[in-house]
Amino acid sequence: MHSRNGSGAAGTGSRRLRLDLLHAFEAAARHLSFTAAGQELFISQSAVSRQIQQLEENLGTPLFERRHRALALTEAGRIMHRAVNDSLERLLDAAARARPLPQAGQVSITCTPGFASFWLIPRLTRFTAGHPEVDVRLSATLDIVDLDRTGIDVAVRFVPRAKGNGPLLFEEEVQPMCSPSLLANPKRPLKTPADLRHHTLLTIDMPQGAPPMDWEPWLQLMKLDSVRPANTLRFTQYSEAVGAAVAGQGVVIGRLPLLGDLMRERKLIAPFRSGAASRRGYFLELAAHAAHNSDAQDFVRWLQAEAEPLAGAGKSTIAAK
Image (cartoon, helix red, strand yellow):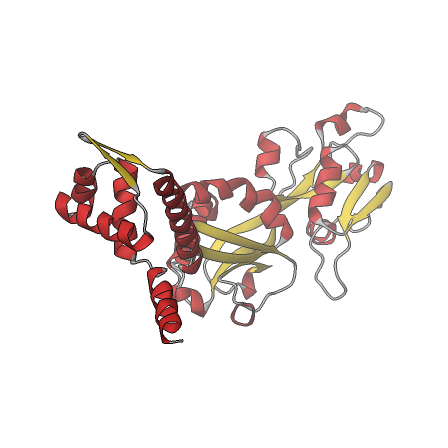
């Protein structure tokens, strides 16, 4: 009984492999040289040779054929080499998964759908090109989002100038716009504001309680309240109305500078000169928690630089609210 227990203990001990011996074996098997393995491990050639001998004694079989000035793996050596490499790969994979992922920079912004579609998104590649490590998250909505409650860093608020809170990016000017193709029919002229009676007006259905943002303010400013269009098409989003105008389906209130690119591309034109300030503007607001987010501050500075040619007077440096 005693000898069987002792034999069992010895057998268990013989199955325990020292990691330092496996380390030396892997290097020697890869280089097929005890000298090169020693140089890699910063130990002597004789130290590598002794560790390999200890491993071979532990396994009870030779792992290398010691030839004149050369080494070759035995069949047992090849089996061990494959097993050690597989184990190392699994350990490296586990270590990679165990390490915490590097935290990418992030900035979140809320703005109106029109600002996002027509002004911000066409320019956004210029920011991401200079900040490829920053994750930009965009929430396009007409709702006035609470920055502290939602954790959003930056807001571009489209509000009356009297209610603007923060630096002004730019003011808005409105005027009717349409596709050049809409002017091709001489029976439906569009040379003066009064000619709108011959055309379809493209307008937005605003949520209940929200102030009108398209035709009504402009008609009042131009004293054209009595003008009745030939037809009206209503949309839920400003981008849909603009798309219909580009397709030649009617006349939309063009909001500048948002539609500046479409005018430069001649997808939309202003058929007559009637520009009027809408008494609204786009104002920047930085959340208090974003005062410690350098990426959010970089994004705000980038927005101001992009808007600088349009902002005119009244710029100011943004501060955390």
